Length: 332
Image (cartoon, rainbow, N blue to C red; front, side, top):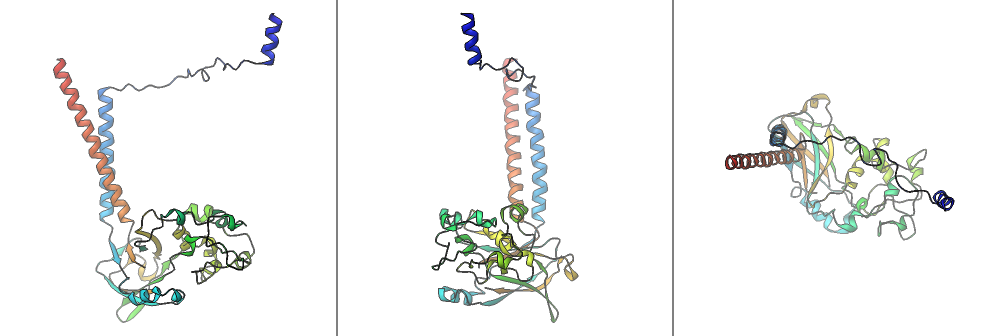
């Protein structure tokens, strides 16, 4: 009988875990003692920390100056021209003058903004091929890019999808009017996208040159240039790793949004930022173009969040202290 049991034990080994502290969940652990003093102290310390961070962020946000230039009305003639879909490829130019009353020192960012543009539509959000944007040879007919996949002759679009096809393609230049001379403000068109997007999510096909890499493909219907000629001044800013393209492909959650377009280069008379004076936007034609020294709205909202959290923590700590003191009086 014993031999039979031993044979069964050998054929069916025991599944009982080892009698070790780790497998029996008997490892030593620190168990905090939640007393009145420790709980209230943690509330007050966290509240003071949130208050300090909130004050710093609010002060930083209040120091940001922002100018919004809505060129929809100024470029109304261009808007009317674009109402006819047959004129989508015709260029239209307009100018907007504005004045800076004070210097904008430090880093100056230029954004473009759109209103009533719903990038959060489900079919729009998925209308892309991440495999294609990684520079891989894929069958885009099996992707979600439809109907912007191939032309009638079978030529695939590069890049495919509705997001890429609707890219913001206005060209905006900034000029500084100094006395009787007009000076073009140097703007940086690279370094505006996220590092992970530029180096991980978007890659060009491997080839000795981009034109051969995209051979056999065609630009999207609403594009004026092929993807390998997006930046004719900088070969390293072409193809799928073009900064303007990458920024646009990160879709917004709301219908009103801003995307980073350019940064002011700190050279010559703009070494410290934008001096006060008269400026002109030259636009090759959507809704809002703004200059700011920082992402003021984001910082301001974050500061308010920390202030609200500080008030909540202080309120909870005060109520807890009142209840504890009241219970002590009743027991006493």
